[in-house]
Each structure stands twice: as C-alpha cells, then as structure tokens.
Amino acid sequence: MTNRLAILLFTLCLSAQLKAEIVLPRILGHNMVLQRDKPLIIWGKASAGEAVTVQFAGQTGTATTDAAGHWSIQLKPLKASNVPAELVISGTNTIRLQNILVGEVWLCAGQSNMEYTMRKNSKVKHGTATQLMDGHDPVDELDYAKNPQIRIFLVNRKELTKPDPGHRGWNIAADSALRSFSAPAYFFARELQQKLNVPVGVISSAIPGSRIEPWISEAAFQADVYYGGNNVEGEPGKFYEPMIRPLVPFALKGFLWYQGETNCFLNETITYAHKMQTLVTSWRSAWNDPTMPFVYTQLAPFRYSESKGKRVLTKETLPEFREAQELVLTLPNTGMITTTDLADSLSDIHPPFKWEIGRRLALLALANGYGFRKLVAEGPVFEKMSVKGQTALLQFTHTGGGLISKDGLPLTGFTIAGTDGVFVPAMARIDRKGVVVSAANVPAPVAVRFGWDEAAQPNLYNRAGLPARPFRTDNPLTGQLTSVNPTGSNTAKAAKL
Image (tube, rainbow, N blue to C red):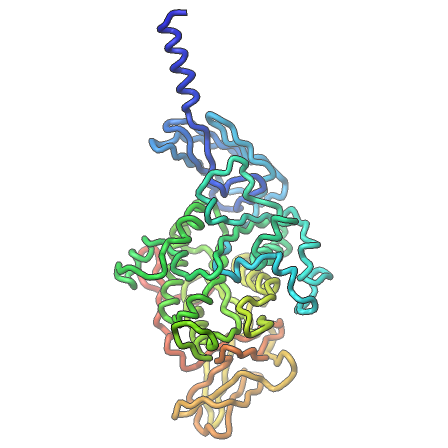
C-alpha cells in the first residue's frame, strides 16, 4: 500500500469517526405520547450537512442538517392510536424509539401545588376523600394505577437541556415513576383518558415556591407594551429557559397552570393579571398556536394575613388576588376552577384534595375543548345584580341544574353594603331567579360580596356539586385587562376553551 493510499484511508476513517451521531432532545423518547390531529415535529442535532430520515406510522420524512447541525422533520397529523408503535430516526446512527402512542398531550406547570407528588397524595389522612374513585379511596391510587394508556414525563430543571442516550424520560403512569410525579397532572390525565378513551400524556414542569416571572421569557417581557421594555423583577426566564423552551416544538393540546401563592404573598393584583396574560400569550406564541387551551387553578383558602413577610397582608389579600386571576379569563380559550371547598386546613397552603383538583381541571377541558357540551364543568359564576327596595337579587351562570346549599343550611359567605360602603353580614336565600341578599341595617343596598375572606368556605353550589366562585359586585378591576392577539390588536373576549 502506497503512503498516499494509506493517508487517504486514514483520513476517511478519521472523518467517519468525527461525524456526529444523531442526538435527540430529551422530550423525545420511548413510551411517549404524540399529540393527535396536529402536525408532528421531530427534531434534533447531527453533523452539518447530514441527511436524516424519520419513519413513523407509515410516513417517512427527510431533512438535511444546517450549518449548526440542527434538523427538523414534520410529519402529517395522525389519529389517536393505543397500539404501541416504533419511531425510527436514522442518519449516521439509527435510533429506534419503542412503545409510542398517539393521543392527547398536556403541559402542566407551576409551583409546589402542581409539583405535589403522588407520594404525598398517598400520605393524606384516610377518610378525607370527597368521593370514591372506581370503588377505592383516591388516597390509595398508587396501588391501583396500572393504565398503560397514561404516560408521564417529569421535567428535571438540570437535565432537560442535556441529551439522554437512553431516551427514557417518558414512563407509564405506575410504580416508582408515578410516585414522584405531579398528583394534579396525573388525576387530570386519568379523568381525561377515561372520558376520551385515547392515550393521554402529561408533562410536569414545576418548581416549589416559584413566582410567575421565571416562567416567562425575558424576550416576552421586553416585547409586552405593558412593561414598556423595562426590566421586571423576579428573575424572568430563570425556569422558562431550562424547563419550558426545550419542550418547543413538541406538539401539545394545551396547558395546565397551578401557581400564584408566592405572588399572592407579594400582595399583587392587576400586575399579576398582566404577568399571567404575558405568560399565556407568549407560551402560545412559542408553540405557534394562539388558541391553545389554558386551564388554571384559582387559589384555595389559606391564612395569608398571618404570614410574617415584609408586606402587610389582610384577610382580603387572597380574594383580591383571586380577582386578578379571574381577569385572565378575558383571554380566549382559558378556563379556571374554583377551590374554596378543598382546603383541609387553613394553615396548610397545600390542599390535599389533588384528585378533585385534577378532576375539575379535566371537566373544563372536556366541556370546552373536547365537545362534552352537556357536562357541567364549573360552579355558579356571578353575572349581574339588581336592587329592589332593601334587597339585592344576584343572578348566576353555570347553575348546573339549579343552585343549592351544599349542607342544607342557610347560605354563608355573603356581605352587603349601602351608600356608606360598610359591608355587614347578610342574609341570603335561593329563589328561582338567583340569590336574594339583604341585611336589616342596610336599607338601600349598593354592593354585595361573596366569599370575600381568605378563610371563607361558602356553601353555595350548583346541583353538579361544584362551588360558586367568590366575587364582589363592586369589582374595581373590571375592564382593566385586555387580551393582545398575535397581530398586536387589543380584544376582550369571554372565557371559552
């Protein structure tokens, strides 16, 4: 062999060794669920100029990597499938992802109440269940969770941006993987899977104690006219960059959000509503879908006024924060559940009834996002007030077959004020048109409040067993939040997924 030929062979071997293998983002792996009825993007990295092929469900897509080694292949939308399939990515190397299903995928994010694990759920005191779940106490769900149609992916802040050679981030919702997973997200998926009868995948991305700002990119704050390009405190992007951005463009149906306690401690109202609006619109923009469903949890009763923080909080701090949360419903395709009845202890900021929280989130998704129009998905919502003499008549939407007192006792949680603006406890009763409210010492009612105390757990429900949303008829925030669509124009729309 001549020296020239030996050098040529050595060079060819060296170049082959240096040629980078295909690397996938961590969210793509064995056991995953792919979103049905949407274009599916499979992406990753390899050598610059390398040809990559993706094969799945009878489709084949090809792409050539760019100068930085990035590649992306889009597959056509697929129908739901509970038959495990193989997804093959090939180039210099071949990756075979096994046990892939097609169904519904939701991203679930927030702070500690979203992070709240199934392990913690199993330690809840027995006997606190509001109802049995398929004949067993939901506290014991870990003993029964064996459904291979539910898949889970737990985001690790330190690992999501790193490749996983084993591609094992997704798991069937059972055993040790489920023990460490979000209870609200799991129970949401459980309800959804039972009602839709298709595979469901849920991604949990949550950090205990986190404010809302870190979940929003710095670029989103800079682009939002409300902030005028000014810097926002709270470390914007801190969690978005390692825990949300790497998930884009993995196809999703929608988002679940359970966060706000930390911002409530900061005594925020309208500023929180604007931040949450920025989060919703920027996340939808990241996934290039301005109509993606966004369902979230209104905060449960807790004694914020007894906190020892730098800010002085009152018994009305929580109701005012809830009012700000409700403002976000002006954005299209949003929904919010009420949790006034789910606090087991007013000194515990982590309500134990995560199975019911997950179920209520699923009810909203099913009723408004999946066509279950006859399903009662939320409790009574104040609509309007009229005054006649010494009484105020309150009318509600979402009455679900009629208003009731949950415990059969006189209605609780109502206060009323006259022209002096002083609110006093009120008598309230249900009639065929709504709720009639009055107080002997208020001859000319001007305003009514309901559940307007951090500890309030009122007994006004609809016949579907869902509690009425707290409110005040003298809401000063009405009209202060407008939604911004992708073209930049302002709109105000009713909440509808």
